[in-house]
Structure formats: C-alpha cells, structure tokens
Image (cartoon, rainbow, N blue to C red; front, top):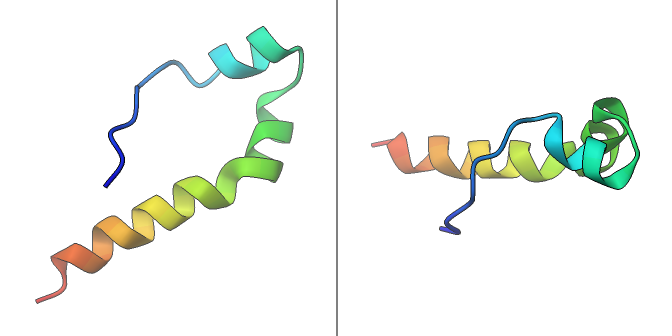
Length: 44
C-alpha cells in the first residue's frame, strides 16, 4: 500500500488554478480504487 500525504481537499485545486469538481472528475477513481482495496483486506 502506498503511504499518502494528507492535505486539505481544496489545496491542490488552489495551487493548480482549477476546481475541486474537476479534480474529482478526473482523479476521483484513484480514491475509489484505494477504498475498494482497503475494504477487500477486511473480507475474511
């Protein structure tokens, strides 16, 4: 599992001059994939 830095949700859009909605639209699947992987480890 990749160790990820935790930052405020609005920080990357502010730094890159875009919106949270655009970030979620284009990169939200990465978070979902991590969540699915984490849940899969809980299945016994």
